Each structure stands twice: as structure tokens, then as C-alpha cells.
Amino acid sequence: MTALWIAIGIWLAAWALNVWLSASPISQTRLGKLLVPLVFGATVLVLWEGLVRGLGIAPVILPAPSAIAAKIAVSLPILWQDFAQTILKGAIPGFLIGAGAAFLVAIAIDRSPFLQRGLLPIGNFVAALPIVGLAPILVMWFGFDWQSKAAVVVVMVFFPMLVNIVAGLQASERMQRDLMATWGASYVQTLIKLRLPAAMPFVFNGLKIASTLALIGAIVAEFFGSPVYGMGFRISTEVGRLGLDMVWAEIAVAALAGSALYGLVALIERWVTFWHPSQRH
Amino acid sequence: MKDKASQPVIEARGLNLVFQTADGPVQALKDVNLTINQGDFVSFIGPSGCGKTTFLRAIAALEHPTSGTLTVNGMPPDEARRRRAYGYVFQAAGLYPWRTIAGNIRLPLEIMGFSRAEQDERTARVLDLVELTGFGKKFPWQLSGGMQQRASIARALAFDADILLMDEPFGALDEIVRDRLNEEVLKLWARTGKTIGFVTHSIPEAVYLSTKIVVMSPRPGRITDVIDSPLPKERPLDIRDSREFIEIAHRVREGLRAGHHDD
Ligand SMILES: Nc1ncnc2c1ncn2[C@@H]1O[C@H](COP(=O)(O)OP(=O)(O)OP(=O)(O)O)[C@@H](O)[C@H]1O
Ligand SMILES: [Mg+2]
Image (cartoon, rainbow over all chains, first blue to last red; front, side, top):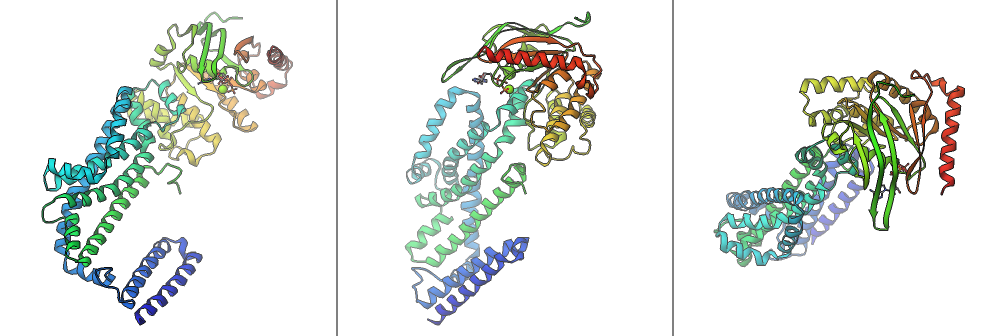
């Protein structure tokens, strides 16, 4: 029980520390902005550790963070292999292909009202298909390896990207388009110099949603058939063997990879759409 | 009073323009007849909704008349637009926020295929003209509204179109800045001999700037009076206290009032 009380004590102390930090001028500095979430995260871990030890929770229900960390330390080669298979080969190529395809289709739709009426409803339909139904079919089509996982990600990413790009292409103001018209600009010139830049805030909104979907899609698709490695494969088999520490280790990797991907997209967004009111400082 | 050298640049004959809206048709222009000659400075004045903007947009081929004829340099407005006959200044600056001020001014030049060196040279020249030298690297949102409007005028001047169309360009500016820019526009007009179409709500502004004042009235939008100004081409600001000036202003005001009574 003492572990529990120590944990709660540390939690209260850290809470007080954070309250003091966010009220003090330090929180306005770069370091301070980083410090508050770090202290918060560390507190959660300590409390978690204390709860598990103090209440004697079985590792199958919830392993302590220290146990997960120990498992990560001894399983690095396996974790890396799974990461490479699922994220580097499945999620990221699927993400890029899906976003690229959505971009091309969005331009085609923009040029042709006929396609707009035909393709958007089809896209809507595909987006409504549940991934648990879709994944086994795509595994049948593209085999057990990463290609089928990338295909699932493409399907999942495509529609949210398409909707955002199509909306983004409408985002320029009438006066801005009229100006282009008075200069006698061609369709391509207007697209490149006005409509695409104006669309970027929407595009990045889509990319941020898509980055999360890509991760989910790549992992879940492995539940329906995969080689004997991959994050989704590992999670499903280790759950069966009650190796919950390994499941949590994979979850930790997935969370890190997801945050990194999202962070990267957000960073590029900041650099590309610096002019947008939401990004100005 | 017509100058022999001047020839018609913009000609409207029996022009009608009807917008189809959800609440039924709106007649924005009714039977408009107007000739604008090379080098004219024409002001359009009239109450809100009388079709000033619509007429200017029709000249620039941004709206299409329902009936009647409209020619620019002897050709249809669409054709004139393709030949880049217009510089258009909208009521709001309409600068692209992802481009710097210089980048915004450079944009029409990029589209029209000017060489890089010429883009630089022209951008610097028009920035100087509107007194924004040194602000080229700023982004639009870092400038005041008046500065943004000057930048948008610079952008319309950069490619040297023969016709400059300005829709209430100074509407949002204070009196002092407005006076200064009015003087600048007059100087520019005298130096370049451009044909200028200028929409305003201000009687003094219209009388001070124009060689021709077009008074319009609403519902349906039509021309009620066209006044050829007897004022000399050289116009110091204090010309606004002269008797001639006050007489023209009076006639414009009467025209506006008469339009109102028809309602
Ligand atoms: N795109 C449009 N669709 C429908 N009606 C329009 C459109 N543009 C203008 N109108 C209508 O045409 C009429 C003339 O409008 P216009 O903008 O030319 O007036 P204006 O003289 O410029 O007025 P203001 O001084 O307020 O700018 C108005 O009744 C307006 O509601
Ligand atoms: Mg108007």
C-alpha cells in the first residue's frame, strides 16, 4: 500500500508544481511550455505505477510502466522489425499514395462537374465501408504482406483527403478570383498561384486526420492476415498468449509513431500556412 | 467640348443587365448609354445599389450584359480582357496573404510573362509611386488598411494597362489620406494619359478628379445625368473652393436628389 501513498503524494506535489508553473512567468517561455506537459506526463506515469503496485493489479489487466519499459528494452529488435513492417511499409506509403490520389481526383472533379456528381457519391460510399469488412477483402487481393496494409490505408485516407481538398479549392475569395480573371490568367495559373495556396489550410486539416487514420488502418489490417511480424500481428498474437507487457510495448511504439507523424504534419503546416490567421504569431 | 485627338475607348449602347436571383430578377442596369474617350477620367456616383459596381464589372467582363452592346477598344470586353486592357482596383485591397507586398505586385507580371528583371524593375517603380518603398518584404497583414489599399493600386498599375477601373478605392480611408491619394491619382493620370473609371460616393471627390461625372439612380440602375467638367486639367487641392467647383458639385447633388424623387 505504501507505494500507492507515495504515488499519490508525488501526484499532489506535481500538481502543485504545475499550478505554480503555469501561473509563473516561466510558463510563457519556450522551456516552460514544454515543462508543463512533461511534468503532467511524468505524474500520470508515477500515479499509474503506484496504483498498479499499491493495489496489486495483475499484469494481465494492466502492467506497470516500469514493466513495459523493461519489455521495450529487451525487445528492441522485434519492435523495430514490427515498426518497419507496419509503419514504414504499410502506413506511410499508403498515406502518401492515398493523399496523392485524392489530390489528382480533386483536380479532376474540379475541372468536370460531371465527375463531381459521379465521383463524390462513390467516394462517400467507399468511406462508409467498415474497415473490418474491407481489410479481409484487400488482404485477399493484395496478399499477406505490406501491400494489402498499404491498400487499406489508401482507402481509409482517400476520402477525408478528397473532401478537404475539394473544399479547399473553393476557399479562395471571389475578389481574389476576379483579380486573376482581369489579368487574363489561365486555369492552371489560377490554380497554382491562387487556389492551391488558398486550399492549404484545408489540405493540412485533411492530412492531420489522415495521419491518424493511416496508423489505425495499418495496424488493424494486420489482424486479418499478415506475415509473422508487424505491430498488428504482434498485438493480436500476444493478447492470445497473455503477453500484455508486449502488447503495451507495441501500443507505446504506436503512440510515439502517431504523435511523431502528426507532429511532422503540423510542423510542415506551420511552415506552409504561416500566413493563415490561425498560424500568425 | 470634345478633344479632336480623343477617340472612344468604352462604348455602351442600350445596355441592360439583369441578375437572376432566388427572389426573382433584379435589373441592375437599364438602358445605359455612355461613351468614354481615350484619356477621360470618369466618375460614377449614385446611391447604393444603383449599379455602379455592376457597370464597372461589365466593362471588365466580370459580368455579362443581358442585352445591348458594350465594346472596349472596339472589341467585346472578353476579348479586351484577354489582351490585358484593364487594371482593376476593388473596394477592398484583396491582397494574397501568402505573398509579400512586392510578391503581390509581381503576381500579375508573372502571369503576363514579364521577364524577371522587368518584374523587379516595375515592382520597385510602382512601390515608389504609392510611397511604399521599403515595405516590399512585409506581408499584407502587417500593413495598415490604407497601406494595403495603396499596394493594391500599385498592383493595378504595375502592368501598365490602358484602362484603370477603380471601385471606391479610397472608401475606407480617412479624409487626409484620401486627399493625398486623390492628388496622386490625378498626377498619375496626367502623366500616363490612362483612361480611368472611378466609383465614389463622395461628391467632392467626383468633382475634383473627373473630366466626366456620371450620375446614376437605382431601381432600376440607370444614368440620369452626364456632366462634362469645365475644370482645367491642372487641379490644386484648393480648386475645391472655387465657384466653378461649387457649381458642378451643386449640379451633381441636384442630379442625385432628382434620382431619389423618381423612386
Ligand atoms: N451577383 C449578383 N447577384 C444578384 N444581384 C446582384 C449581384 N450583384 C449586384 N446585384 C444587385 O444589382 C444591383 C446593383 O448592385 P451594384 O453592386 O452594382 O451597386 P452599387 O451601385 O455598386 O452599390 P454600392 O454603392 O452599395 O456599392 C443591386 O440591387 C444588387 O443587389
Ligand atoms: Mg459597389
